[in-house]
Length: 260
Length: 254
Ligand SMILES: Nc1ncnc2c1ncn2[C@@H]1O[C@H](COP(=O)(O)OP(=O)(O)OP(=O)(O)O)[C@@H](O)[C@H]1O
Ligand SMILES: [Mg+2]
Image 1 (tube, each protein chain N blue to C red):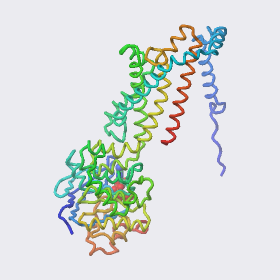
Image 2 (image 1 turned 180 degrees about the vertical axis):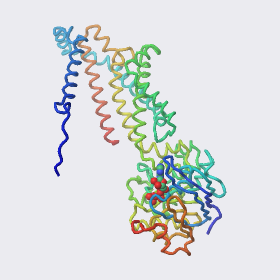
Image 3 (image 1 turned 90 degrees about the horizontal axis):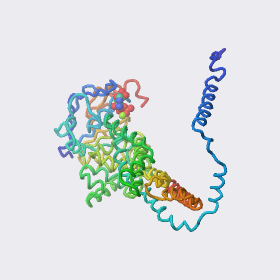
């Protein structure tokens, strides 16, 4: 029982790798700050001015933004719903335990990766160019964005189900769609609803800024009040967005807990 | 007792898994309508492989399997689904949809008789709903009609699975170690359920690890070893010593 510990390598002895990567990180950090001029044009005077004016919100503006706030929520709802509906068939086609054909699955997954590579703001800009300024552009952007995100969440959920019931349905002579309806959907329904709510949460947040690009909703007012230097009104818009996001998050969290 | 349907003729069937394992090695077996066949053999002998070939849950590498004269190994699409409809299968781990009610699980056994549209929207006929209730009654589970399957014990789940398979109105019932995870009392109930189906005229083929149960229920015992059929006798000719040959020296392990 005279086991000897192996000699440490030089690199292991002094944690060379750790120190080197630490140094590299610090260098990149400083370099990036320097190159982007992160601190260059910051004016404390302007900052205080803006803050003080925002401290005195123009409450009369509240009534003016109720409609755009509602529009924002509607955009998020419709976009998430449409995205989910499109995502369901795609997620089934991308799931390993549903589609055994590797090529078909590969093509679908590649397509989904492409869709997910598009950021929501870029999508909004593209849709504004296609359908023009207004909530339709927002709905379009959010539909595509939700579609990409939900398909991935859904097919990963589908891949974790118990295959036993699918086999049982095969053995009773069910066809593909019947297997999905009777053996797959009941197993993933709750997860689907939970992911739907989660995406809705994200979309409500995203849709508040989409208006900035002309894609409808309250974001437009953010843009307008800022460019008119009406920071007292900007404050109201920001507060309204905050309230909506907090409420939607809270409701969605409650519902998702109930589903778990 | 026998209705003439529910015959299984296995002609020179071999199955080699993609990884090269020989699952079945030139099996020949002729099962008549109304038989209660118990397949015995060591773990890995190929019992599940054989059963799953009969309703084509997987393909065989060679040979043919005739169900009432029709070769299932070559059937496709709708034709295959209609053949499967006549063959019920009962699994070791029940394979119920845990989050669905007992009623929905049982009705799922009938979907082979429905169009995609009607089954998707749950438009089951009144007769079939009554049939579901009757089949649950038969296995003493009617009071659990609206219960979620995950709230049932293993034995109760297996009885629901039997009710589901009855919805197929099958001629053949395959059961792969249906009692492996059950206690002695529920084991007897489940085996009696299978016996009952056999009395109603269905051909029953069961994989079992228990010699006692095989002797008590079978009309014929088939032994597999290393994918080969090494034993096949009607129950009247079976003697307890025969199992030594099938199980070799590891019999006490079962
Ligand atoms: N999917 C598979 N891929 C590769 N080999 C397999 C597969 N399934 C089974 N086998 C092999 O085929 C042989 C027969 O397996 P099978 O499951 O039919 O045995 P069994 O008699 O049912 O055993 P048990 O009593 O343990 O259920 C075994 O050697 C097993 O390892
Ligand atoms: Mg087995």
